[in-house]
Each structure stands twice: as structure tokens, then as C-alpha cells.
Length: 372
Image (tube, rainbow, N blue to C red; front, side, top):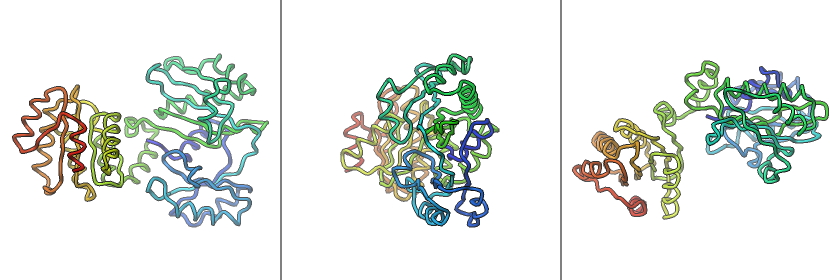
């Protein structure tokens, strides 16, 4: 789950990390003048979104005086991000910039460690800067060791900043990362004013599995769940990875990579995906039934493509779930196409064929059939 920037900012403040002075404006709160009185122009007005790329979408605005604030806030609230309306805007004092740096922590599955990444160039084009090895510094933190003093010294020398300031920054970020069960914590840009470092733009990803378990995340989880649609909330509670799109074809698979590749094929052959739903590994008949029940509840979906590679997921269990869902739904007009391959494939085919549903072994044929 991606928390709002202002939520991450509050975490940084509690950890003693320097951030800019700001004011949070809610769509529901029209009386924000008092909050803004404490701020001195020039100001930055930023949409609070659960994702990246808002700057390139015009959702970050710079204003020279307070007379321009109302217009900037209204324009952002009138905009959308990924099809959803914007609920919060953060108004911040603009920080004097000597340099824009970059600093992040992220889980590295291959290394079984937390990667610490620093760059001498931050901002919206940090990806380009990262191509120059001289501009970046990468280290790996072992979870049972945490931040080491040599890491602090290396980052301090790399940034050309005071050791104590970097020490407080790194230990603070690492504590936040672990306390809130994050998989990513990114400061971009980390502003060097010449006198101090200021974390003026913050992004994070929190492990979904921790959202309902970690008491520190209770407020964040409540806000997140209240914003979800009925379908999204049901998917979250069932542990599905679901993304709603604008088309009419639901694409269901077991594994994010497989489901994404299947969706790409649907697009390539002229179809229009309306749902991306990853069952995950080891899906039982009941789990498959629950997924299809969610999909069948969406009026824009009239075709479903189920693509399963049996491994820890058994094809016969998938077939049982499909049959149960088809028997219980009132929407008999929905076209369901199934591609099964792998563990208990023959049994899965038999179960589906007994209920009048033909299965495909070739994915391309299945894709063409769901579109036809």
C-alpha cells in the first residue's frame, strides 16, 4: 500500500528528521485560511496521491503569494489522479535549494537485505542520473545488523555533509522503515540548503500484510480502507492483487507477472482489459470462487479470461472454484474462457468439460477466444 506523502512526513517529524513547514488541506475542509496563515510565500501546492508522477501531471503547483493559493488548491481538487478524485492537498513553504540529492531504502529480495541508495542528483529525472555510476552510492543493510557506522561515514563523505547530521538522518529513516513495515522509503529530493538537509518530498510503500497487523499503522489503514470501493475493499480483505481498468474483459491469473503478460496479450490482440486480478500462489477452490464472485459483480465486465499455470496451484481446485462461481451467478451471459496448464491439468479439464466449459492449453488461442 502506498501511504500519502503527508502521512510519511508525520513519521519523519516524529523521528526528528528535518522537513519543511506545511499545512494540510482536506477536500472536506473549506476553512483552511487559519492553517495557511503560519506559512510564508513562496509556496508549493502538492496533490496527495497514492502513486508516482504527479509533478509531470501538473499536480504540483508553485505560487508566489497567498492570493494564488485558493486557485491552485481548487485546480488540484478539480483534477483526478488515475481516475480518482484528489482528497488532500499539502501546502508547503518553498525551501532554498543549493543542491537536490536523493536517498532511499528498499527491500532487495535477491540480496535478502535492505538496499541503501544515495545519489548526488535528485528530482524528477533521478532515473537518468542513476545511469552515471559516479553519481550514485549503493550499500546493503543486513536486517539483523541495521545501519552501521561505516555507512554513515561513507554517505557523509559522498554528500559532503556533517557526520552527525547524516547519522541522525540514516538512523531515523531506518527506524521508520522497520517500525512501519515498509518495502520502500524514498526522499526525493533531499534538499541541501547549504546549512542543513531537508526532506521535502517523501514516498513510501508499506507491506500490505502488515497493514492490519501493525498497531502503528491503524490510522493509515483506516484512511486507506475508507477510500476503497466495495470491490477494492473486498479484494484487499481477500488478499487479491486487483486493479480496475476501463475495459470489459477480466484477466485472472496466478502470479502478477503471468497476469500482466496475459493482459498485455489481450491488448495486443485487440481486447480491452477491465480487471487485473492476481490470485496469488496456491489458490484453493474457495479462493477462485471468491475472485470470480467479485468479478461477476462488476457490470462493465462481460468476458473473463482465467489463465493458470499449475504448480503450487492445482488446476482441479481452480476448476472447482470456476464451476461453483458459474453455478451461483445470475449473470449467465458472461463469457468465461479458461487456460489450464500444469499440476492436475487433466482433472481440471474433466471437471470443466462435465459442466460444458471447454479449456485451452494454448494461451494465444484462449486470448483470441475471449475476444472473439
